[in-house]
Length: 413
Image (tube, rainbow, N blue to C red; front, top):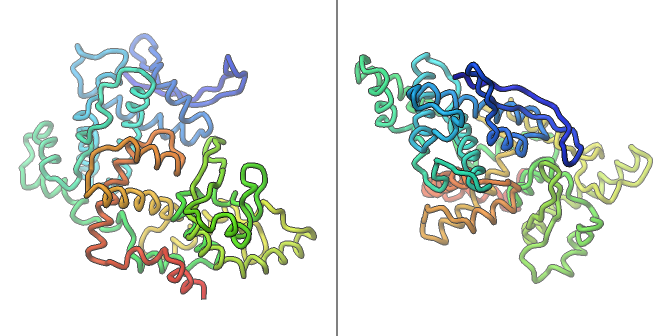
């Protein structure tokens, strides 16, 4: 039984729209389509070939593991139904084992975990859409502990009994013990250093904006100078303050991933601080825009670079890539979005005295803000990061200071 994949294009029978995505099928003398999987791929990946390629490749990898680890007499065409929490965990450990046995650097623990989250999301989708899911999606038993020698040795003793135990521990734990490059939370000094390397004030400001909203780069650039339609209430803070001076938040209607509209809460106090930092630059840059394009800057554009050019998500990506190349640690603009989700969970942990159990209300609130359709795995990921953050706070209580306006001001001098 071989799991194969193929990229297809077709016209949707109901909408008439052209669709394209990968599909998975079993080639075992006869062709058997994995219909549930293919519907999932159609819903999740039809807007991006790269996303479709990644999702289908990861699922193909996991299902192939299920085939290889299951007795032939027990194999069924609906191979995904053989997945369990223990199988998903074992798959992660196997990937670590194979990587270290061959002395490779990839895949990283982060990639392996993210791939497992993707597989978990498929099973969550099954349950959420009324299909049978053999995996308990609210359980955490599927998460492999990469720092546990017991997990690694358990797999080794099961599959490689002739390897000496001491050698096994050394080989399988090498990456965990020596890899210091993958840090879940950057220090305050590291983020300060990264933001100071941008060649334009607008990028640290955008980073700050995303850190208290959870917006993507493609979304933050949509925030208007003066809004229209659903965002007609958005204008300069001097005008908005008259309406929202007693409010905690206001709403920004944004078109997110997959052209889906969502309502994002913007903290009034944070926005007021941000706007006061940007306003002096904004006045000058709108004049530069007028001079450069021989017309007034459109009201739907707020973010301009130092030449008066409207900032795009690609510009953010390019500038951030340039910054990252100058650093001796990994930095991404998306760290701002991760920061928001982490702090969201930190507040949740503080309000529940560290309760780690899955909370659907908290998941829904985070899902609405950051724009994910299904984030049970993301929820678990940020719970872990929040725990790490709280531990880091014990060592450096100033870690949260970076995101205050006064700290950011020092970077813009």
